[in-house]
Structure formats: C-alpha cells, structure tokens
Image 1 (cartoon, helix red, strand yellow):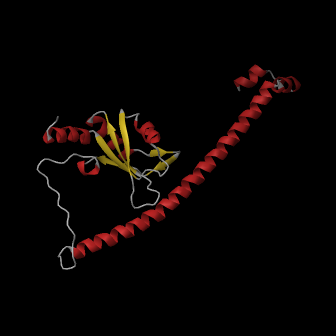
Image 2 (cartoon, rainbow, N blue to C red; image 1 turned 90 degrees about the horizontal axis):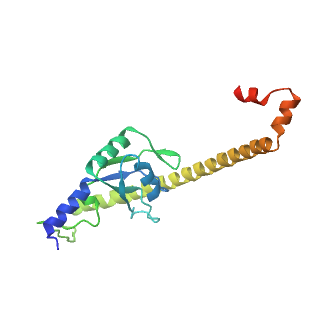
Length: 201
C-alpha cells in the first residue's frame, strides 16, 4: 500500500502530463477531442469537467492526459498557435497545463487540512462571500445565454453541412449514371470528340 506521500507523488506525475482545455463545443465528444489531439501525441484519457451551473450539465472543458509532459507542452503550444476544429467549425479553444486543484479525484496533499465553516452576517468575510455568490449567479446566467446561441449555431452548421453533402452525393450519382450508361461515349461519337482527348483536357 502506497503511503500518502507516494500516492500524491504519483498523482503529481499525472498532473504534469495533463492539459486543461476549455471553450470546447457543446457537441464535442471524447472521440472528437481525442481525434483532434492524437496527431500531436498519444492521448490516454479525456475527462470532461461538468458545468454544474447548467441544467443540461454540458461539459465545455476537459482534462486531457497525454503519454508524457513533452507531448502536453507541444499540444498547449499548438492550440495557442492554430485553429482548433470541432465538427467543421473553428473554436476559440484555450489550453494550459493542468493544476492539481482541477482534479476531483485528487488525493489529499500531505500536511494539508481543509476546514469548512458557516459565515454569519457579523463575520468580516460575509460581504466578500456575498459578492462571490452574486458574481457566480450572474456568470451562470451569461453562460446559459451563450450556450443557447452556441447550440443554435452548431445545429445550423450541421444542417448546412448535411445539405452540402446531399447535394454532392446527387452530383456524384448523376455523373455515375452518365458514365455507367455509356452516355459519354454516345455524346463523344455525336460530336466527333475522342474520349481520350477530352480526358486529357
């Protein structure tokens, strides 16, 4: 059985090879994020961080564990300098090195003790806590508004992409039917054009 110090040291190694990314698309899945990052390193795990302020609990941030710290640094650099595409749409994704406090399953740090207590109105920190509570509520409303519009935009984009795909498929079917029915040969014969010459042009 590992001691508390050994367990925390093992956890710290995991933190060092993990990155935090946010501003992800609400429709991004683990496989989408993994596919986007696998070209830069070996992704071991993608863990979405739920947004508990939203009713739908949609995760727009994730902790991505890589094989080693060098791969983690490379991906942070790449995301800072290049567009991050999700579902055919560029996202203003941000990336940084992960910190221990971002993990909900982190072990207790040796020598650290956490104490929780209620604040009453006479406490000097009461007004500070009240302001923080008000700010959190305001940010939750703003996030809800933005999320609604993001989902609408991405649904419209998906619809347009499907329309383009269907139109391209219809063109392919038309070309295939022309070539398959030897219509091209008959047209070439009618207009006295050699098919080999037409293919070269």
